Each structure stands twice: as C-alpha cells, then as structure tokens.
Length: 443
Image (cartoon, rainbow, N blue to C red):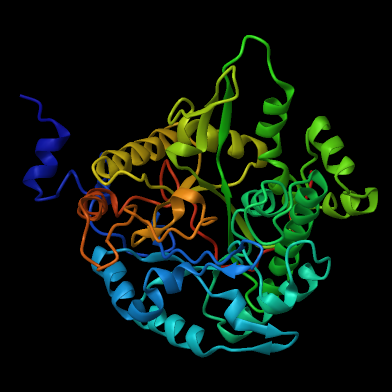
C-alpha cells in the first residue's frame, strides 16, 4: 500500500509540524512579550498631564498627585511584573526645562536610568498638555523653537532612547486651551484654537528634526484623540460636521496632508497664514512615524436635537476610527490609550478593545501596538482636570495604593495568550528597521 509523506517523515523521526519542515502555521503567538524588534508593542502608560487651570493658573501635575513622584521605583516594578516591554512615559517638561539652555535632569536621570536597567522601553512623552511657566502658554510663537531645543537636549542626553511622542494629543491640547477655555490660556475663540494648534504642530515637527540629529532611527508615536460626534437630527448641522473634520487638522499639518476645504477655510479664518500653510505642506517630518489613536468610549457622543450630548461608545468604535486615520495617512497605527471609568466593566472593555485590534489586523491594517492607559488610577479625569475635586477615577491596572485591579489581572492574561505575536499582521517579513530615518519620497 502506498505510504503518505507524513508517515515517511514520521519514521524518519522528523517533526512534520515544525517550521523548518514546512506545512505548519508557525508559533501561535502566545507567551509574554519578548521586546524584540519584530514583537507587537504591548504597553501601559504613566499619566503625566500638567496643564494650568483657573485664573490663578494652578498647575495640575498628575505624576505628583497620583504618587508617581514618590513611588516611581514601585511603579516600574509593576510594569515589569506584568511582562510589559513598553511604557508610555513622560518627563515633566515644566520641571525639566528651566529656561533657554537650562535644564534640571535630576529626576529624569533617575527614572530613565531605572527603566533602562529593567529593560523597559520608554515611549518618551515630551509635552503633555502644558508648558513651563517661563514659556507662558500655547499662544507663544517662540514655543516651537524652544521646544525643539529641549527635544534635542533630551535626545543628546539619552541616546539609547529611540521611541518618542513629541507632543501628546495636539488637537485636544489646542482645543482645551484655545477654544473650550479649560486649560492654560483658557481662550474660547477660533483664533486661540488655531494659534495653539499651529504652534503645537510646528513644535512637534521641529522636535522630530532635533531628535533625529542624535538618534537617526528614531520612532515617533504621534498620539492623537480618535473621537466623533453623531448628529442625531433630521436636519444636518454644519458645525457638527466641521467638528468631526477638525479632528484631523493637527495630523494634516504635521504630515503635510492637505486639509479638507472647509477645515482649511476655518484654519485660515483663525489666523493660519498662507506662508505658514505652505511651510506645513512642504512634507512630513523625519523619523519612522506611527499614528497613535487614543480611544475611550466617551470619545463618541450623540448630539441630540436639543443639543444635549449622550455617550455613544462603539457606534463606530476604535476599529473604524483607526481605519480612517490609516487610510488618510498610510502609516502604521497603534492603540495608544484606552480605559473606562467603571471598574466593574473595565475587564470587558479591555477585551473589547483588543478584539478591535485583532479584527483590524486581520483586515490587513498594520496595527503595531496596544496600550492600557494608565498603570494607576487618576484624579479628576472626569472633569478633564479642569476642577480640583480630588476625585479618584478607577481607570488603572492598579489603584493608587498600588493594589491590582481586576483589569490588571486580565491584561496579564491577555499578554500570556498574545504576547508573542508579530509586530505587523500577516507574518514577520517586516521588522522595525534600525536604519536611519529619511524623508518620504513622493513618486
């Protein structure tokens, strides 16, 4: 009787299921993350917001308020204990950059040195909702110049750091400071909004240029809010339509992507000059660029006929919003922030977001990372830090006493099952290259 080839292989004591002999699907992808260049980037974050609020310009500092300043060694040990290799981590810009050419590296040296010792890769957040007092606020046209100097100084001092988020959530920062009147300059005008946005986008571009002088293969995770307003009205409201399109304005300026016509008219009415527009449209900044999408269920809202807003989580969901960013900018994407305020549903929310990631990867979109944000609970997130209530929001993998929450155990389980998957979907053909970054070439 003819024998099948598997029987012959078996008698030759060859494992027909092994990769080296073909006919196999390879590794399942289970096991904790390795942190190698072809490994998917699982992360958490340590919240580092520091806007000023109120007429007295009180400085909110989440690293101080939530205990990281005191418990940073324990916090890093918790990250390592989960098996994570990446951490979204911010330097306190307002405490580090003391003036032109003047820096205090004391805390940065200690914390970043410990991350290096533990083998945790920081995605270093350089500007998170606020600036040092000497810089004033986001209306200052000198911000891009001074911030680029700071970014270059960071890269020079810590040449082993490769991953950066130069400016966190440019759109949210500009809107909250220049249009919604919550933080910093507390303006409520299109001029304030557009001025803040163009200064922040320029600061991010110039920071990328400064960093690659010292780290030519730098990777920039440009974290931006993924949000949407659903117009629940029989008669479409143009202001809601414009609101949804403005969400892309920051990345359009950052990447030299021509904004939609109504957005461009809004920007120019708000003070963007033709010369400034031409400067932004010259092209995208250097470095390997990843588009980070921050998505919380409260990012989607329904605007009722009377103007009331209701939460509308997952009508579109992270998957659809991230897909739109991908097709607009044609860059790898990363789920850079998520949580919910309800500790009873956070486990379900974690898995739901992970299913969004898996589904988008199955469709061929290069999703390269996922982040539960943040490591610990936060304070006054429910008012966007605009009110000093001292209310603890139970959003963390750990509470503020550094005790694990159920979602922390769930994240550990997720990592055990998926920690070994490849960086990009459909195989390991592409690694995160170590070659020097270069400007995009149009063809």
